[in-house]
Length: 294
Image (tube, rainbow, N blue to C red):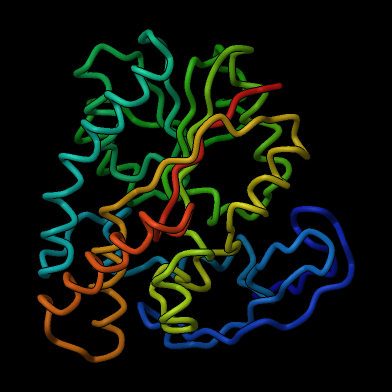
């Protein structure tokens, strides 16, 4: 059920130290250890549920990325913001590429992003292994996303590939990145959004920070470890963009887990985190990395 890694998932280093113990507040209430690699600095969940057993840690109507069913306050706000941010993402990607073309959303969840991109003239493909999310995405887009990596690997190359809060969930990190890069055109762009361990809110909340989201989040990146990843795979980071809305969602979840019932206080905290992050480079709650092949 659990697998204990003997090598760093990123650099294959064999020396890592226990860094922090974090509770899964969202679903299982179990505690998990985060280790830090002494070679590349990556922090990762270890031990972790293996691929055959991780699904049970997603089985909740409140897990909005897969089920899209829950209508508690936090998820209602999430859905409202999602509509706006999807438009924002599509406009940003189109501007960066200076054209429209083929886009792959790797880990497309319930299909909202690819649905919005298709309406804007993009040729869209989604990949999603979760069966519940697949059904939701098919209802929304009229076609089923790909769920088999062997089939995905036969697709034509893409102008843009997106992983919005997906990279941290992937068991086979190296294998998956190689597959993704094989599908990316030479002048294509890769967009990776992930929580930021250098963020002001993580430094304040530490093990209670909701964006750690163990054990679903297997890796916990910061700009240094993302730069290491980019160099390892022959990529160049061309831009790092803050995702300011994430701070509000994470603050609401964090306070919910801590038993605090004042949403206004959470919003004030998130606003303060974003204001402070403007003064300190790359310290927002989540960051969007735009990468290209060297």
